[in-house]
Length: 318
Image (cartoon, helix red, strand yellow):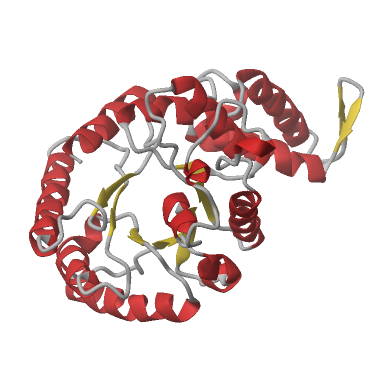
């Protein structure tokens, strides 16, 4: 966790923007019986990071979140009281795992908002949810549509485990080819269906879909291929990393190609000069429908530091 926070600060210096979140883990990170001590350790890290930020003049704020225990876990309310009650102002969002229904989410929000009030946070704390079971996929629209939900992530390994052996262990990993017979996380029908349900639902409600982890962290080529599939094929907007070495390959896979950025900049700048009337670029008609697409390319380029500093489209982000 300490290394992740340090890396985030280094990346902010390098890119001039915060290109990844750090989520401090209280669910799988805590030993059984030591949940309270672990939560206080995480709180101390958050407060230390906040003190460091205040002592350095930086226009870019880091994004630090916490994953608490599931709503039905005995440590959930304790996590929320310690972390939200003690550091709500410093959190960009709270991650709630294993949300299976809208009722569970609303029950969690009662506890979260009570703790946030005690910490004097004024604006509602955004919520990220983990969809990790067949029941959660069945109810994903109700969960994601909630106005407090900002993003939904797919919890691959818990999803596979929730099927009682009906999905093989191979679906927790990534094979070299992802052929149908490999039954990995990009070829097993039930896993792919769940990913598509989450991504499509997030797009329907204007939320961010976040792809699951790839555990093969020693193989950069496998990771980057998986990240590109998650972005280009399945429509996810973000992806989890579980190791520092995964961050740059994921950023590269989710960022638009430079040729794509240059093309988008040319179209949007020409459209702006034409007051958004239809235009022709290289003999191809563009109007407001395609402008929307190419504007989104520029936004992604800006968020991932892929928009060159001297590009004419920089004017839109000043």
